[in-house]
Length: 278
Image (cartoon, rainbow, N blue to C red; front, side, top):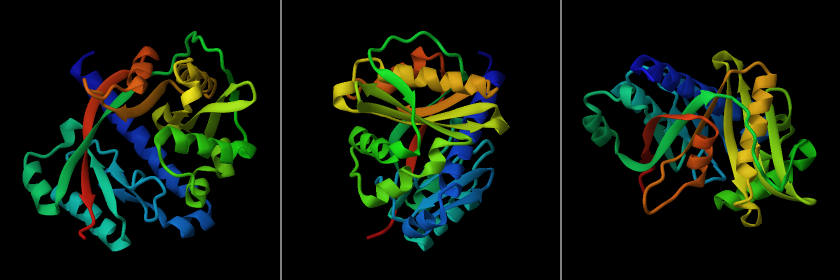
């Protein structure tokens, strides 16, 4: 792919994720906003999401979606907001071409530190034949608690009342949102979520987790396929996803699933993490 096409897909991936992160916050009902301290804020050409009482180790506290060079003022605004709101930590994620030349000085000035590396994946949402012995079904609001329980086990966080409040709500199963499950008999062993983002002609793919008894059985490949199919049914051309970048010591099946689904790894981004001083 030519460099200009790479840049175009990188920007579409960033804009799609920014829209999804924003909607994760702004679609929450008022009681969840108040309970967890949820908000979303424009930040340069990206977004800064805040969950003060984040049930998932500050994961949803992020600044991302940038397609123009990031400035010191942008970082200072995000750090100032995080400090004022009282979050424990937040991650700033920059695609390579928006990193400014004075980034090392900005990092030092604002107390950022590098953390995990993530890879952005983007490409046509093209369904394909996938083999699995599990039954794939679209989930409804009545499955909200079970969805969160599988997510908690798959990602290793506690399924607290706060976690259920953040992930369970009915809006995640309707309108622009859709959630799917993989069943072994009557047991839900895998889940996945999507958001239609018409402004980028894309579907945001995320929230995928599988219980140990459902792994290596094609669950996530099938859940990718059914979401691609729904994206096409909605008239969306592309799919956007993110996962952590594997290395020789830490393999990542999700990265391989996304490759097999036909998505291109358009860029990598480290988490630049700000942590609240002790």
